[in-house]
Image (cartoon, rainbow, N blue to C red; front, side, top):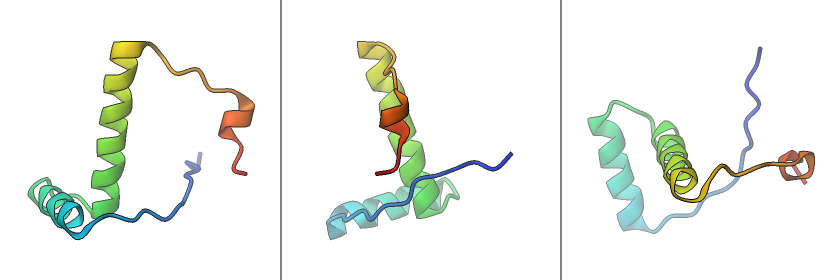
Length: 63
């Protein structure tokens, strides 16, 4: 089964971009994979502190 992913533009300042790139290199990851991993970690941390985020069909629509 194919995984559906949302695509969007992300703008970072040069320092943050360079730092994420270095972290990704040390973990043998692509920049995209590193950013995705960091986002997932933050979501897990947030949900641990605040409870599960419940999504509706409207939340999942790409409009």
